[in-house]
Length: 203
Image 1 (spheres, rainbow, N blue to C red):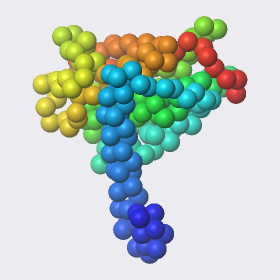
Image 2 (cartoon, helix red, strand yellow):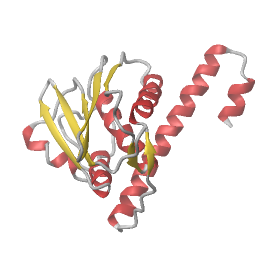
Image 3 (spheres, rainbow, N blue to C red):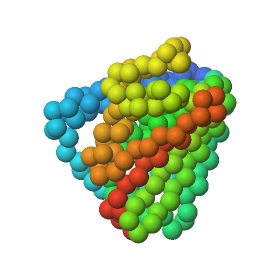
Image 4 (cartoon, rainbow, N blue to C red):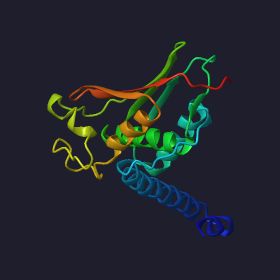
């Protein structure tokens, strides 16, 4: 319905508002999907449908969506992905949601000028995806707790959320045969590293 309204809308400002509305709905849908996936994970009913996945293009698209959703923030995003990096072989739906959650957290917890970097390294055995932000960081006491479902830290009480995101990300990465690591310095930022075994498709 919003697509139809956007096509028929002649006012540029209203058209932009419709675009933002669509992205909010997309983000809400992703959150609902994550919650349902959390339930399926607990019931061990997740089935992956793997295919080739271009992490560079998908990351750029997701960040551009967040630039509109968080239009009041000045987001700086940089990629460091070698040109010979092979495509990942993952479930696009679930992996999109993993990246969406990590980016969303990085933006929400990094004030008005988030600086987010993504790097990708590959060896014969594994691929590592490193996402770093300049946010408030996570205290040593909370670094394990943030991966628990529904955990909400008192360190950032004004930031909205449900506390399911990082638990979901870690479980999805684990189902892909990988692991999720966290390094963080309070008041300086956090780095999340996804490491996956090399079940890749050549680009």
